[in-house]
Each structure stands twice: as C-alpha cells, then as structure tokens.
Image (cartoon, rainbow, N blue to C red; front, side, top):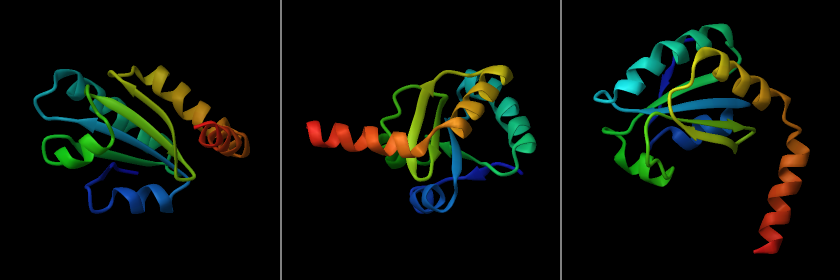
Length: 122
C-alpha cells in the first residue's frame, strides 16, 4: 500500500477508522526525513494491513503543533485510535520492523487499563 497524506481535515478520521496507523511527520528540507522516506515506503508495501501516513509539517503546521512535534522526522503509531508510540529520528528498516511488531503485539486491554489509571491519578 502506498503512503497516505494526512491533513488536519482527515487526521482524526484516519486514526479512528483503522486498526494500526503509522504517521511520519516530515518536511522537504529535512535530510533525515528524506533518508527515512524510502524505508517508510518499503515497510508500507510489506504491511498492507497498516495505514502508513505522512504529515508535511510545513503544510500542516497546525497539525504538527497539535501533535507536539518538535523534531523531524518523528514517527507516531496509533492502535485502535490510541497513540502508543512516538519517537523523533530516522529509523533504519530493522528498527521500524521492531516498532511494527511491538505495536501489533500490544495488549490493548492492558493499554486502556493503564490509560484509565493515569486519568484517575490526575
């Protein structure tokens, strides 16, 4: 599957309507972003059940700010509508595969319990 372009208009819908979404926050002027782009694209071809999305931080400043993006590239992962991973930096292919495996292997019932515990503690 090719990557999907995310905007402020479709971000929430894409996250909610798909089981797993990986989001690459990037910019055209960013060297590490250009290095990570083919790795991200290759992974999208291997994992057709996952939505691989890209957010151009220059075009989508509001969305990047809402996601607290302070460094690019930043990879975020969502599972069942819940943000479960965020890390700046260009990942090599093997590290991206490890992230994908970890996201797939998450026990989402446990994740939801942890989120609820944190909310109650606040």
